Length: 248
Image (cartoon, rainbow, N blue to C red):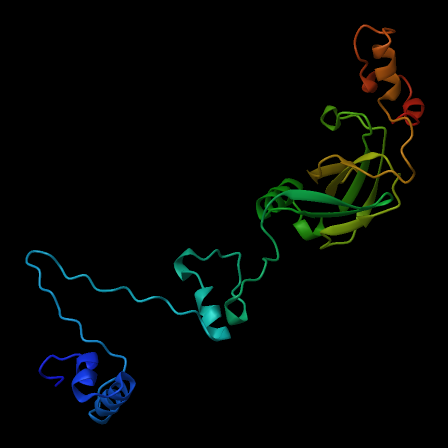
């Protein structure tokens, strides 16, 4: 009956049997003759002048650590020489970036963490300039208090420096004053004992250690608000540093 083109429903009606029993008998017959129970034959359509379109297979997700790691591996030709390939296909941060930089991070009102790096080009230039290997040049660290001052103008309220051990690229700077603006510099000592800065951080404000008072702009703003001065005053022009520390 199936070869005659009858459906399972028509066969069940002619045999006066439940359709579920007919479906069971049909699946059992197909299994005995080696046919897949879920396969469906679809006729192929031929088109002239057009290429047949093949269905795209969906990518199955990786089921193991090795498969996940393999998907994270980039093309070796585009791999940066600064990055080392770690086990299981993951990347490690490079030990250095061969760049001239310094960054400072506040830890507390009295402590700051500073880290820096000097490029190979600068090291070679200084070694040629002073005719000494970079490792033999004395390293130093300088702290500048530039509260309410412009660091680029070369002025500082106070500064002090100290020697650093060789191969040092970070330092916890403490104790510092709270509510103060600092700039940190890394450099070398010349043969004359002068400090030669190589890299410097951006100006950094340490937090207050006590609740805020009147604020550093309160008095100048009050004088301008009540017409005591024609224009707002610049705090850099105040005569004594000790005086405006209390209103900062």
